[in-house]
Amino acid sequence: MRQIVLDTETTGFYANHADNPDRLVEVGCVELINRKLTGNNLHFYVNPGRDSDEGALRVHGLTTEFLSDKPEFKEIAQQLVEYVAGAEIIIHNAPFDLSFLDMELARTGRRAFKEYAASIRDTLVMAKEMFPGKRNGLDALCDRLEVDRSGRVLHGALLDAELLADVYINMTRGQDALLMDTHSPQETGVVVVKIDLTAIQLPVVSASSQELAAHDAAMTEINKASGGKAVWLQSA
Image 1 (cartoon, helix red, strand yellow):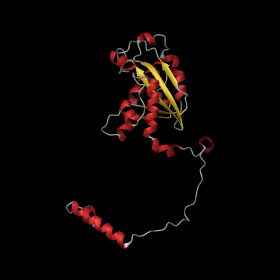
Image 2 (image 1 turned 180 degrees about the vertical axis):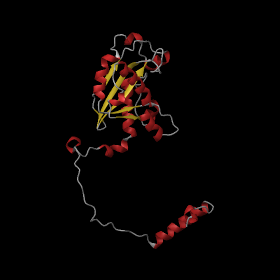
Image 3 (image 1 turned 60 degrees about the vertical axis):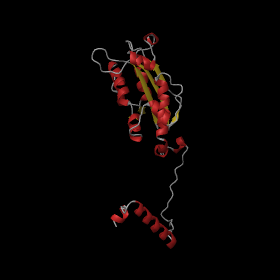
Image 4 (image 1 turned 120 degrees about the vertical axis):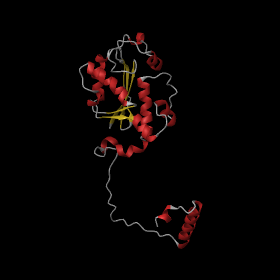
C-alpha cells in the first residue's frame, strides 16, 4: 500500500477570496510503503505572487523575499500530481489543504486534487473520533502519542508531514494486520497458510461447586452494595 502524507503552508486562510485569494507557499509530501517511510519525499517552496498575511507569516516564517526566486505553482503542478497519483493521501484537516490545492490546480487547467489520488484520509477526523473533547491539533497529538516535535519552532510543510506520518502510524498501530497484501506474499515477506480447524474439539471446563458458591457470594455482595439494584436480578 502506497500512502502520501501531505501538508501545505499558505499566505493566509482564504483560498477562495474574491478580491485577493491566498496562495500556496510550500508543499511537503512524505511517502509510506506498507506503513514504512521510504525517504522518497517531495518538497517545494512556491512563489505565491503576493505577500503573506501577518498571521500566516508568524506561523511559517516564509517571507516574500525568500519566496521571490522560487517556482510558481504552475511549474511544479505536473510533478506533484504524478507523485501522488494512485496513492492514499493523508492530511490533517484535509478540507483546508484541499481547498488550496484545488484552487491552484484549477489555475493551471487541471482537475481537483482528489481525482488524482486513490482516496483522502483526514487525521483530524480520526483524532476527534479517537480523542473526543480533547485538543487534536498536530502539536497536541505529538505530545499525546509521544512523537518528538522538539525541532518544530515554526510550521514547515515537510517537517509537519514527517511529524504527521509518525502520528498516523501511532494512531493506527493496531491495524497492521488489516493492511497486509495477502495476494503478493513475495513483496511483503508474508506466507499465508490455511489451516483446517474443523476437526479440533475444544474441551469444556465446568466450574466446581466451590467456584459457583464463591461466584454467588460475590454477586450477593455487589447487589448489596448497589442497594439491591443489580441488573441481572431485575431481568431474572
